[in-house]
Length: 144
Image 1 (tube, rainbow, N blue to C red):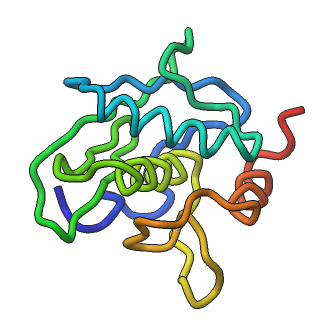
Image 2 (image 1 turned 180 degrees about the vertical axis):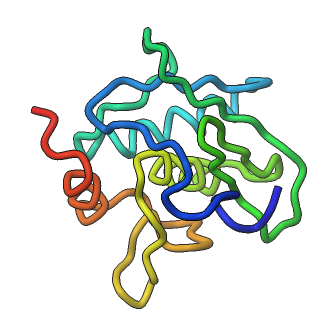
Image 3 (image 1 turned 120 degrees about the horizontal axis):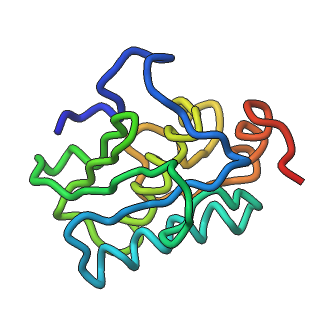
């Protein structure tokens, strides 16, 4: 795992349409990992982004796997998979997964000096915000 959230140049990664279902498959699931994934899904759903589910029947799938990494490395979106630092837990785990799911929707990093966002680099505390929802809507339009 590398410290950046993306292993490719901007625009090179596959992004998932926020209006279409995407199944999240948890590799080597534990109660804590599933709880973290479910909390990330809930955080996006609280804003109206209904894209992600663990039980969705669709060909669009993102594998969430857990790997050893340095303490400064949280997560990495790689097009059709997300790698998460195995040492994360609780709210930090959920926020990191929500951040990487933001990349899956096509969102980029937001400088914290601009605004608080789930997409702030190194973020472990800010859940998806209404401004993040606006950024998703700007990319994908309204799904209603």
